[in-house]
Image: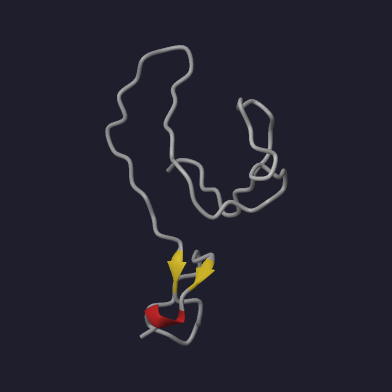
Length: 77
């Protein structure tokens, strides 16, 4: 399994042009794009899976998952 990022946040200065009102270092990311990049050689990505990290955070619920990072009580059963 690849890397798992639990709390992505804005950092770095490699992008240009940058709107300083939007890019505030240390701000948690709430949306955006996903990029896949290979270094130094061509590659085909055979299987890419995305996991929705929004869901039930109530441990008493059948739909509880410990990896959920954004609570949505409507998803609890």
